[in-house]
Image (cartoon, rainbow, N blue to C red; front, side):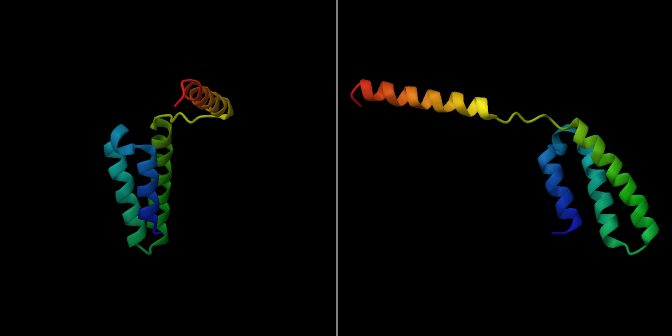
Amino acid sequence: MSLVDKITHELEDLHADETSPGMAAIVLDLAQAMASTDAPTAKAVAARELRSIMADLRKLAPVEVKGDAVDDVGRKRAERRAALRKQAAGD
């Protein structure tokens, strides 16, 4: 997987096109510039800017709500109750 592919994947995970489309486009340009040059100085400058902008994009990314163990217990309890209701109703 190339640098551009990795950055693209992370931008998708961060929903950067929705929150900051301009910054996302700049990051892709920087990644492509890094991939297309062999000049160490140019790569270092692009990498520094890429790192900085990606840090900003990570801060702007929407927070994803993921369930924890308590949510799992509640979900399982609801499933058991639904199954018992179904069984009691004769289904």
